[in-house]
Length: 489
Image (cartoon, helix red, strand yellow):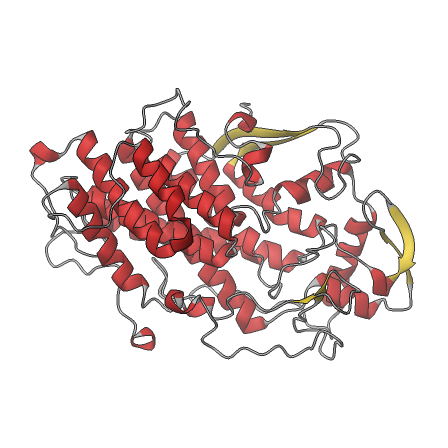
């Protein structure tokens, strides 16, 4: 089993170093690596700005769709998502150099629109690729002009996709939480918290992009297409069973559980869960020695699967507005003595249930949005489905080794011995990402399992939709992917 550490290292996962150093990579030349390099530039912009998982998944989708549309202009079969074959170039222009340049200008123009404060990151990459960093419009008969035209067409739609990008992704649905942070009246509904917990002057959480379920997806008919059944109600025995399961995990955490929870966390300062799977896509690209054409297609499908998974998960989060474990446990066990993780380096102790804390960083104890379904489970299952289909195998064969004391939640303490996480298959990795949220104390079992099921359905749907563009969709009279929704004009 290959070690993923050399390509998706601990530092990369945590957003501290680039996946590929364009000055030192000896695996393939820069032209062949164009998609990988722009994917990493997108990850860097996300790490620098920390927009959250929903906005980051959209960024991957928008930039990789723009790159795909530019590339399709040179492919004899594929068509773009926005302009079909209007930018089609003759076959004698179908060269690696032309495709790389067109893709780069598509990515550059798109990323400046998405992350205007990060332009220096993108300028630097353009210069490393030997290209002039400019948005001045060129002829659409040139690679630069084709990339710019593809970017313009994709952005024209995306500015009206319901994400509200032009207004800083502000909520468009007037969401108000049922429960205030100070009290919990409805144990079926989400409660924003002040963090760190028990700090009355702490930062008050706000639901991250509560409107996201209404964003126009890539392959789904709507965010509600595969909406899962309702989670357990407070009045049912299953509710208590699910809460008790999280209590039991928290009280019996092993070092392996802790490392799994941390490895898949991907919170602020990282490229978030979608970025983890985009990095895994980079690992597969290098493992399988992809060509530029192969990378374009893989990342186009992978990014849009992650995008649609986020929309579908957030539809469920907003529709059910379900409670997080920390709120349920602190309320149900208030005044009762329970066994629980007592904080970094303190192990399991007997504490009052009102003081229960998930195995997370103290300043970021639980995500700022409802529990059901798990975004991690949805994102991971959707990505795994695409990777399985693209590689024609579920084989992953990667691993990650956590050195002694490398924990971020318990630095210098955990693990006491080196721990290796291994994933023989993409499915195993996705399943571990899902259950990591139970170990971490921030999801219930139904949120995980139904999130996995949702993600698999999304991945299959996106895969099938993407094939229509990759395979030309009949070309004549083809109905394009992006349909303007009157709600978002």
